[in-house]
Length: 153
Image (cartoon, rainbow, N blue to C red):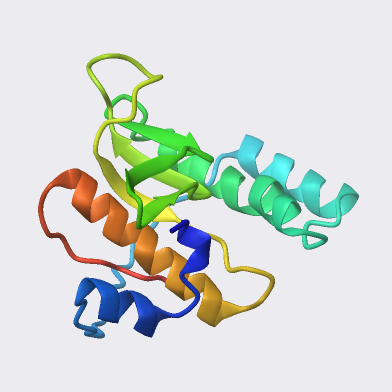
């Protein structure tokens, strides 16, 4: 099944035997965006309808933020945009963004996924959470071991 076929968190939990647990995980960090980032973001706000579509939100809001943070980690990790993942017949699809370890084979080879970011689907948070969770399960399987699944609201 494609990632987008998973519509509810409970569906993913049952199929993959995931136990739900809620914890506070936020850690305060101070970081100032660059002047270039702020100028580009303000330009986007002024001249684009940033909320017109999923594509607009992905390109004009989410990617600029991810890219800005990624700059500090680019020598160690790869940031992938719309990279297909195929674990098996039950786990395949294309996450919006994923962060992976840097492959020794170069930037065209996906190494182990570490983080997956998914934008909510047309304001349907329940459907977005189901897809997000199954993408995290796929990343977990590709890494070959269990790790904590963190879902941001």
